[in-house]
Amino acid sequence: MQTIQSSEASNRFAKCIEVSKRIRWDIDRDVLRARKFDHSKKFLPDGLSKVDQLEFLDLEERRLMSQIQGRTYANLFGLVERYIGAKMLEVSRDYWLGDQVALEALVRFTDEELKHQELFRRIERMMAADMPPGYSFVPHPNDVANAVLGKCTWAVLGLTCHIELFTQAHYRHSIQPDKELSELWKDVFLFHWKEESQHAIMDELEWQREDAKLTAEQRDQAVTDLIELVAAVDGILKWQAVADTDYFLSVCGRSFSDAQLTKLRDTMLSAYRWQYIVSGVQDERFLGILGGMITQPQMERIGAALAPIVN
Ligand SMILES: [Fe+2]
Ligand SMILES: [Fe+2]
Image (cartoon, rainbow, N blue to C red; front, side, top):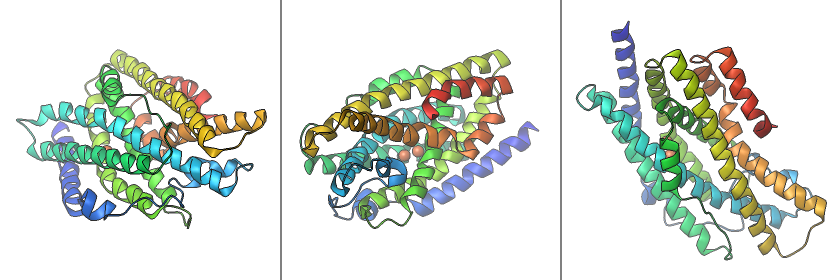
């Protein structure tokens, strides 16, 4: 049984390598193509930014808010991809002198994640050059990576699988017909999704391989670790939603009523929670993989922890 499972996994890794080679893209040649961001367009689609819920904002203000969220998107992906690359190098250790197909697939995965970090760093700098001063993004990729990597491998792979699955949901939102959306941002979603599709398959394989090593007690602790990781992500989002709302207010040049200010802050946080937590944990594939590993009470424990974030 073990041999059959291993050879099935090896076939899936081989398929990931094949697709990875076929769709491999270059930042300058394929994504940027010497373009700049068009600041007369939105950076994130409404389905992600939720700006369409802010009916008291005019079109220009909605566009500004989507551009601020786009800049934070680049910063947050640069942040999570630091720890993801490091974790994949770590789990690849089991294959160094073993399955060379799995090793190659995970090395390519890490290489792609390094490239994505560079892409997000570069587009952040491009956006910054054409936006007013005052934007801030405080969490440091290495501080966050050290905190995440301190949790057990099962939980880290669970968080990673959820992230790589929600990039696919984000791509789907970006292809909805929207003439107001920046063409360059559309391409960022498209090209990132192309490589993340393979990453999600490898996350699943590695998460399940790790799961098979755990005792029931270790798995219960791992569920606790996963809940703590999601809470830590939520902590970052809360902080960034405040910083980004303050930046929006400082550059949009008009005042708002108290009720509007509350709605602005609440919508920014709920957009970030949707983008970085809810669009992943409600993904059917994620729920299927997770549900195949844990008990009903453990699933309920996760559901209870997520309830204040989802609602
Ligand atoms: Fe990525
Ligand atoms: Fe990835």
